[in-house]
Image 1: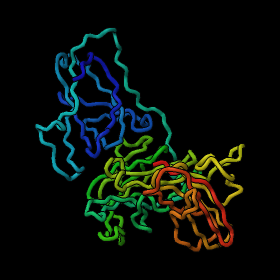
Image 2: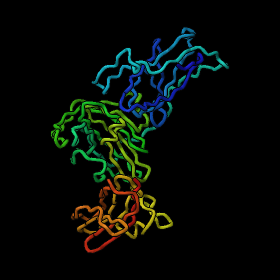
Image 3: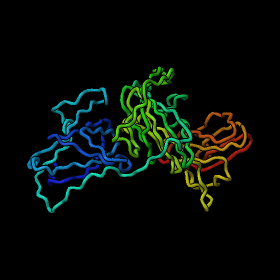
Image 4: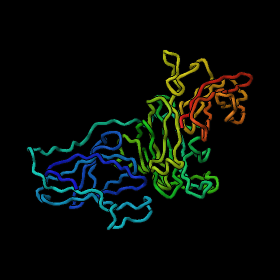
Length: 388
């Protein structure tokens, strides 16, 4: 229990649970003013009687304990969110998850705090939809792994579900603005998080589709009904948003940091198995020293070699970014320092352009290896480090 003075308090709330959502309400008839979400102030404050907080979400609220009728009373944050959310088992009223936090109005004022009016607006402009140059259609699906366990996955509407180690499909240009349409074909809400980028929630819309439960692929997707705007408390700059089941949610993001990042479900067990995908912003930049700022810091610079590896060192999986000048047969091999072949990607014919190929380091011992790229008759080599 937190002792409080009879005045206003500003709280930043973070849901750090593995998978539990919280639907927070104050006792004693108190409401709260939400003033911010994940990445900053809302366009205007929102009075909330109920506050939904998904795993990984952050929200800032102002609670006013100054009413003399509250003196000596205990005010409790209660929770009634089903688990899984939204249609799972209800919270038992006697369970510890039904009462989240208590405030006791018992401390004397240590100075005369004036009541501060909540401003009508914070004048925080948001990115315009017209600035978007690309639309990506992404999916959330569930299947089973080889052991019969639930396997939540991300993917694309056209390509189907993908594992973390599959080739990167999301490659926004640096400083570009894109719309990501996220289709949730699972029965539960998933808090989707984009690393190191702020997005704006544009709308959600009901949809239907057919899911192949063996492959996870979807078909016959139909959008239904009207576009639903985000709740006022979700109208600011976000990096985590609970995508509701049976809905397509549209996010508007400007990718202003170059490099390799991830987007994933913020339910911890889901991002571990296997609801996490990498995305890459921009192209590797060459420093004055001639080394790439992304990935390998040794060997020829990007401008002198057709491929780059990132991250390097890596643990389980790395990505080989390849620049093919003209259509060619491409093969990738990994050797240990004794010259023994330890990994080999199947040879494939690639068209001209940039490509991303996964390198699987699972079960390799820690140490230095040599990655060999063959493009047609030409060979290129680069050192790579496995750090298990």
